[in-house]
Image (cartoon, rainbow, N blue to C red; front, side, top):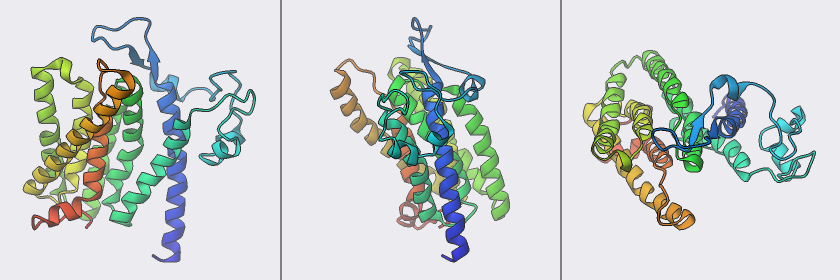
Length: 285
């Protein structure tokens, strides 16, 4: 990679770190605990974007405003040794992990796709996917307030990337991916609503559309790629489920959102090797 390429890559990582910092704010502010369960039995609700984006961040313990100098992603956490400057209360380590996760996942996607317009859809997906996975892991809700705005932005990103690549057929793969990923989960929800939340079905719409983009416009490739993503999600769901049951007890509800997100991301990351094994190619490969 040229010197200019490295400068752009570092700038993109810094931008991803800033987005990761805001992702942490969304994770912290959007969910709120209800006084009593709603009609669906959910103990948590989701605040509006105006509430999430408004106001300065404050320490949960002493409510002191976080200084601007303490808002530098990753660096501030390390300098403060994970504690509030005002009261010394420990800052949850999830703050650091989220700030690291977004630029790291972007860097891995760049490693696989390079400077190509094919990088755009997965880059758009990463921050909201991280937010949805962490919120679901903590609260067992998958906020619609994140999913649908992200989906419409993702549709626009895929259309823009397809147009700039001169490959409008890539959107056919998106549609196939959406149907193949969300279809089975919708069927499970329809047959056994208590076995799966409808938020997981909505999330499958988002990640299925994005996963299908990387099938290089092939209907068969989109079917295969999305089937792999579903399989990985199911396997990861079992692993996360075992961990949740061990941590929360046998009657604990198991979040499926993190498994869907991770399964789709890994499939996108390795779409090239997956499809090449069947004589097909991946978008951007």
